Every structure is written in C-alpha cells, then in structure tokens.
Length: 92
View 1 (tube, rainbow, N blue to C red):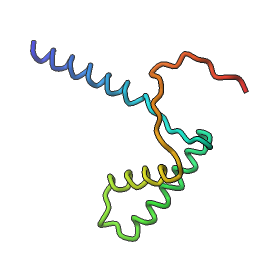
View 2: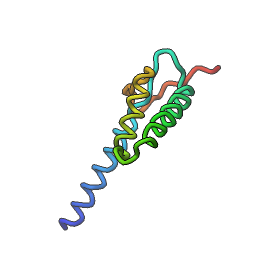
View 3: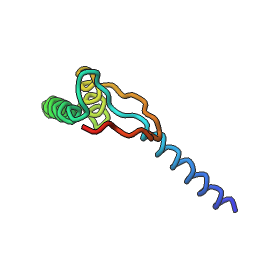
View 4: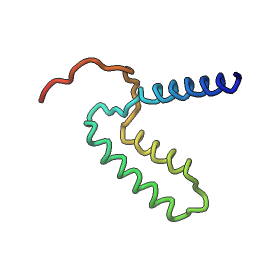
C-alpha cells in the first residue's frame, strides 16, 4: 500500500514541477523572440571559445552560468507568463 502512495506522490510532484517550469519565457524590451536565438548562439560561441583556452577550470555549470550572464548583459531577462493563455494573438 505504501508503495502505491509513494508512486502517486512522485507522479503528482513530477507533474507539478513540469507545469511550473513552463511558466517563464525570455523577454527583451527592444528585440523580438526570434532575436533571442541569434543572441543565445552568439553567447554560446563566445563562452565556449573562452572555455577552450583553459578547459580544466570550467565545468558544465560554469558554462551555463556564463551563457546566462552573457544573455543578461545583452538585455534579456526571464518574465513570468500565465500558465494558460486563452487570448488569441493578433493576425499579421
């Protein structure tokens, strides 16, 4: 009986975390969402070139932190979004 309760609790927690993780998106006051990809790729290249010079002092977490900092320096930030958005976007 306890085994079923454990798995049910595990399932509920996993679903909750999954739902909560989908409530943020990148935001920049002057750039479109398409430009996020360009900036992110540029930050990845810049960070990986720097890491390549001295690879023994960095790990994967340092790489992610440096990319995140580069994106922040370019003006990108994460904004909270609604879990369910029922509004229809305007047609172009």
